[in-house]
Image 1 (cartoon, rainbow, N blue to C red):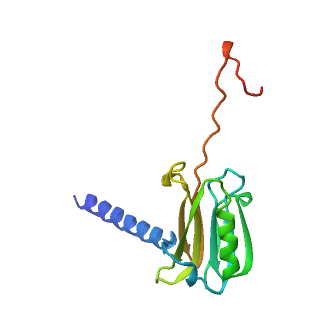
Image 2 (image 1 turned 135 degrees about the vertical axis):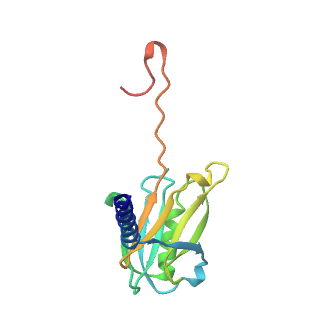
Length: 178
């Protein structure tokens, strides 16, 4: 009986330590709130994500405020994003709007501020909303901001739809290229 209690106590302590170390090292996710263009001031690093082709609905722009203790890192392949540093607020917002609005089904912008754990703004997110009769809001990328040791990592879940196979013709042959 005493041995079982001792084993259970050690297991409980190890589990609590593991959970505590995971919560400390894993960082925290940041919140976003609706923003207006008038509140964007200063100088920004502009991060363009997605938008790699004329029909790509995964375009997203991030304005990372320079002069804050935070750096931004995008958790995406390098070919899927670009970074431009030292852009004044007005120009950064104009470039971001132009980048996300190129798609033929673009409807309007969604501008959000990215807040640190104390409620301070570390940057802005500019994303497109598309014609609701063509694209559902659930088809937009999911974006998460996680802060660890002063570094904001951007995680983006893009939805890429597979190109359908050509319809088969007589004898299993199709119209598509061989």
